Structure formats: C-alpha cells, structure tokens
Image (cartoon, rainbow, N blue to C red):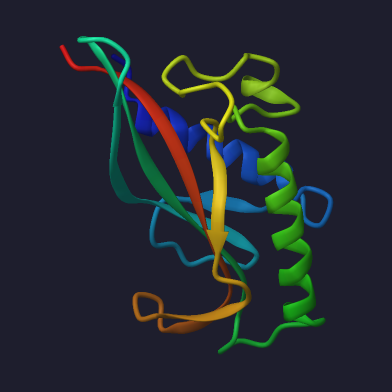
Length: 165
C-alpha cells in the first residue's frame, strides 16, 4: 500500500495553497517547524483515535488527525496591517475550502476531480475528511525560531480505510 499519510499531506498542502490564494498567492506549506515569512502553514501528524470499524476480516478504518498550524504574523517582528483581522480572513477561507473538499481534492492541479484517494473512508455520517475544531486566534511560542507567532491551529480528522493483512 502506498504511504497514505504522506499522500494525505501532499493533498493537504495543495488544498491550503488554494484555500488562501485570494489573499496571498505564494503561501508556503511545510511539515514542522519552519521559519519563513508569514503567512504560512505548518502541518504535523496528530493523535490517532482508536475508533476502529471493521468492514470485513481484511479491512478496517481508523481516524488520524493532522494539526494544521496557520501562522499569520511573527509578533516579535515588524508587520503591517492588522494581523488579527487577516487571521480571521484566513480562518474563514480555510474552513470553507476544507468543508467544500471533503475528499482531499483541489479545484486545480494534481488533485482536481480525481474523486479523492482510495484509502479515505467515504459516505454519510461525517466519514469524509473534516476540520473538527480550531483554536481561534492565538499566540504560539516557537522556541525553535525564537519568535512568538500569531495564528490558528486547525484539527483535521481523516478517516482511513486500511487492509489488516
């Protein structure tokens, strides 16, 4: 089986770029950590829920999470405009885009109209990928780069189908 987590991250990166393209066309997405010029996303694998469903003796599902951190400003640096208002705009754009693309697809590029990955559980009842919560506008202390950062962290829930063989 292909690395379903790695493919999910590649799809998420593409989705994040499209989600906020109306505000900034050159937003960066990385794993963790990264020091660049805000705004940017960092992503890391979060907790796995032990909510396993067996579909037959060979296939089961489980839920992973991806913690998507949106950094809109480094507070320790000069910045222009109102970063809190920008953060609100980015939050709405990100929520809306992920809600409209529950199969980790994109409007353009590699993942446009591909029907989603075959390892993602689909169907009613909230089985698609979805943002389940976010922190709101918060300040992150990032000791790795020596900066306090303004932004929001989203929890993206991913239901995976996996072979148990």
